[in-house]
Amino acid sequence: MSETLPSVGEMLAATVPMVRTLNLEFRETSPERAVLCLPDQPDFHNHVGGPHAGAMFTLAESASGAIVLAAFGDQLGRAVPLAVRAEIGYKKLAKGPVTATATLGRPAAEVVAELDAGERPEFPVNVAITREDSAVTGEMSIVWTLRPQS
Image 1 (tube, rainbow, N blue to C red):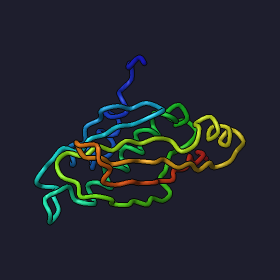
Image 2 (image 1 turned 180 degrees about the horizontal axis):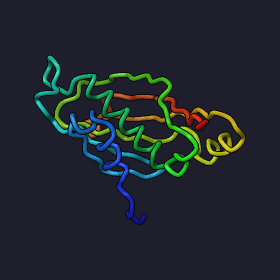
Image 3 (image 1 turned 45 degrees about the vertical axis):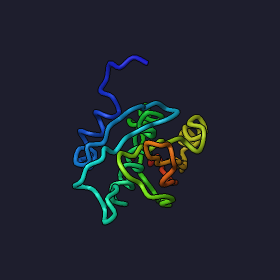
Image 4 (image 1 turned 120 degrees about the vertical axis):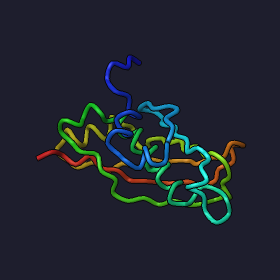
């Protein structure tokens, strides 16, 4: 893929201050998958020495935003992507750096077809949060919409 425009990571870092605050690292961003890492930073630890739940939520939500921009960036002239609701489950203790991997829960073409039909489509993004040993420490499901521009 040719990168003539700013990358999704650069765009998110420029427009979403929390991405910069947490020093999130963009490892992969495509319409099929987004992978972001939260480095191990003592300023963002919780009471047991791992990443704070809020930092992990922000990591996962940012990964979901990255895949939404990668998959639907060509629709930004006519629709605004917005998070509608999210649910996160913390499964295991996270220590050290953690990685969030986001995938679309519906084919992008279906979502665009609904937008083309004048609807306001909703679609899930699923995110797995893992430690360095690949153990899943958290899972998030976040529902996004493409709100048509008036």
